[in-house]
Image: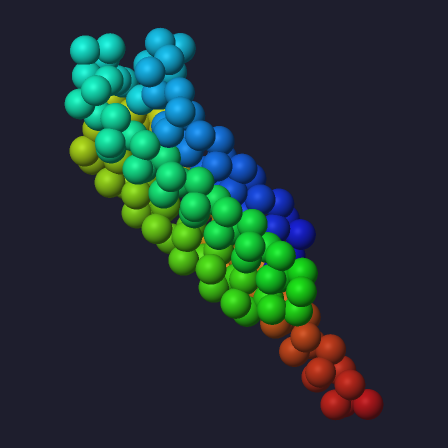
Amino acid sequence: MKPVAQVLAALEALTLITVGVLESFFYRSPELYPIFLIDPDSYDAVALWTRNVGVYNMLMGLAIVVALVLVHRSQAVAGRAIILTISAMHLVLGVSLVITAPELWLSAVFEFGLALAVILAIVLGDRRGRAAAEARAASTAAV
């Protein structure tokens, strides 16, 4: 994986872990109302949902961290597959969020956009890497 893809994946992991912590432990904070749109009267009703979604996000972020470790430990294919899977999930979740809660469009765009950036960085980086390898192989074979 190219360095830009790794940096974007690390940013996605950090974002997921941070949002997960906020969802799990700080969803009652009035300062986070613009992010979660949870009214104080609904705190108890949504506690199970927010905590579980928060744990989910933290685990997805940690899975990306594990995948980045795999990339650096000569297990790039496995690491890349994990990152692509999680990013694809969050791409779909971003679309789902904007459809189901249009008022959270900014969060949806960020979730979708970051996941798309990670996917594109990996896919385009792989294509460029293959093209460069093929060019080297062709020049070596020509000699």
